[in-house]
Image (cartoon, rainbow, N blue to C red):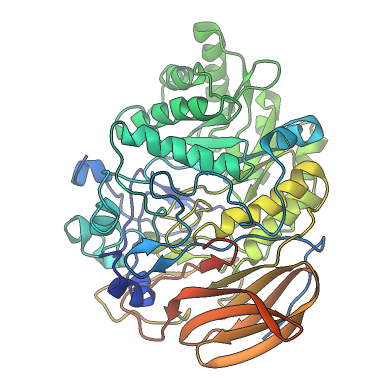
Length: 556
């Protein structure tokens, strides 16, 4: 299986420029003017061209209709927030603490409460999301139209033009939040924990990027925030072996122990601290054995080692003697996922647990590479494998790595869509039953430009398709979760159409056309649930942006 990653602690940007209505009218083009962040090194993916290392922001600035029902006629997800006139963001919720709790009616089903998802058999199936410290909700506590994301990561000219070659560091950003008084960084992290908890997640896997500095400080703050919000919300430690600058087992043992002794650190029922290093194969089994021994003898910490590999096939047998379980970073396209079945079987055959990667998409402007996610096909495929193949744990890859375009967290261009969809599959994964669809909900997912579009701006590095990915496609997907059969009327640019959708989940693909896309449920000649993706597609773009945008009717 091809591996995807990595980056170095860095950030991306994209020209948000302003969140005013005028800017949103140009959102499609601006999105294209997004940014590409190259957070890490070339081994982010085997065979990927090397990419320049990007510095942290703190050092550079202020502090045709083939539809098939999904297994289980009932899957759903609410609408993703999008920009609205006046610079607000639809779906952001209460401006004082946006979107952090359950929104009645947001989902097409009723999500069980935390107690039901954390006890009995459901409690043994754990779901984490990979937290990437360089991209918190805010970097400087400024308003979203002028904060660090807008000025430097979404703007191709940001950070003194160092991201101009690939059109800027990022193409999306966290769903904007207003400035907060007091310890705003801690407050924002608590908000992210509440958002994840409300979606049914058990915790975060924390990417330990550095031994000191802003990323290390934020890691500590996240541990505190998680425990303050919900002592049962756990943080699994994931030392990043593409980024941590040490060859000394003792140095790493000390770093893991410092965070591992906090109450939020994820431990098994027998008290063992779970350690799941990213790209564990970067160090030998002997080296890791020293780390684990030092944690025990120097710090009194017993461990359960669950390495996350870039190449599981080549390393699982060697690591088996010291491991409690295994994971892999995984593929980011909907094709080639069949190996997931074999991976789980191999792990279980060795008596190990398996943590399955679940992903949305992957597009890395600063590395010049992307995967064809097929609208929401990759999300649905990876979740289905986790469920059908009997994975023990799941890792959403990622919660907020905007430089990879892989975020599940609520974002400016996707709102809550991907997280809401995941809540549906998460419920099946944990409880063993597909939840009943009780509210019609529509999701629309499309790019704002065609895959072959050639950017007209100064961008010189453009993304090409990663080997092994599905072929590029220019499609709009209407994903419906319906309580009963209905007609779904659609409009893509100037083209109007309609299709019959069954009860449960149905995916309908339509050709991408210039303009915006929308859909509405019609029964008995009367229109009901409707949704519009507020970002227009265009054939002429200034900056390449191959991330999918999404919206849900469940959130307004």
